Image 1 (cartoon, rainbow, N blue to C red):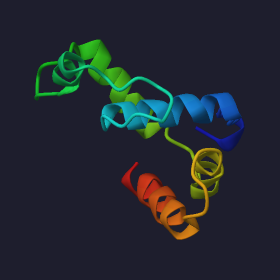
Image 2: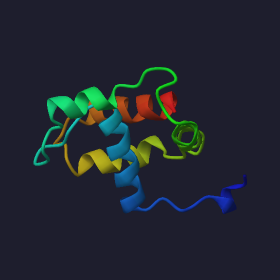
Image 3: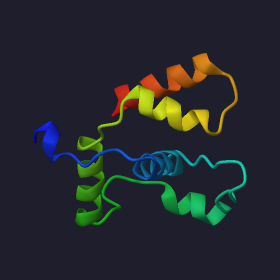
Image 4: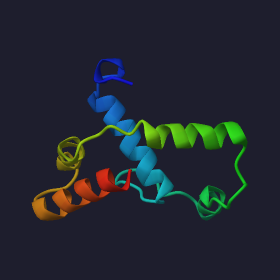
Length: 98
């Protein structure tokens, strides 16, 4: 897939991708309700517990991850005051992970 084939990153798509990443990590943002205890149980994945189509969609999302640390840091700047070094480390760690 060439760079021309990729969908451009917009603030909305960045927001959606990061919310999904943080949702899987069971992290909530200030002002949003935290998941209920039962919801946390449902999000725990065990090998083989997902339907094949859902698993394929998750694998595809990881393979298509194309955010740069700068994009993630700019998103975090909207929510986190100062803590520039922490935002930088987190941004790089997320990109290295995916």
